[in-house]
Image 1 (cartoon, protein in one colour):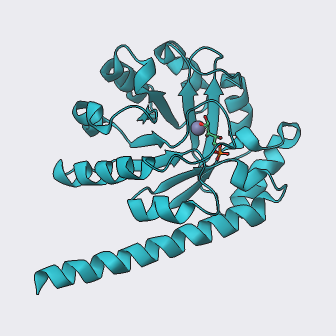
Image 2 (cartoon, protein in one colour):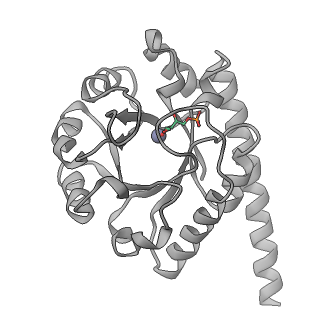
Length: 236
Ligand code: DX5
Ligand code: ZN
């Protein structure tokens, strides 16, 4: 089942609680929080205190995307703040296996993120450990960028690897997921759909979340139908 994951990076920070409630009413079912340190990416955002405040306004899973150097140093703080999912960048971890274990030991769901220029197959050994893989479909650091089309191939490769290795991790996509691209990422096989500017920029998060989720569900139904027919054809 596809889920819409509103990214608060594009929300109005003066009324973050209300923005989240509106996105939730529109069908957002996980809240994506972008943590940036000005080193790993050329931008600064928020940290554990914001996560702690948001924990009080929503019971939805808080999906923290750590775009920071040395992410392992901050895992205990995010756990104390009430984070549910923690995604660390492959490119930021000297000891990825250890960092994923640390996240799990702190009671959170571990995830790994890859930048557009990073190949999917570097993840093979750690795939059994992750709750989800996050495919960046823009270079991380800013909202409102254009979707990079080759990300679709990376999603398809992950779908194939998951089947081949008989695993259950989910596939999340982040960056440029908007009204004109959401169907293609669902058709490629992503099921956690992060959207920032497409949900919040118009100032009508409830309405835009609802439209995006509807498009994603329509695309999911169409591709399920196609898979059913091709499996049937193969069986005949
Ligand atoms: C970018 C962030 C994204 C960002 C996506 O580095 O990781 O989560 O909010 O924004 P949109 O959906 O506008 O591309
Ligand atoms: Zn993100």
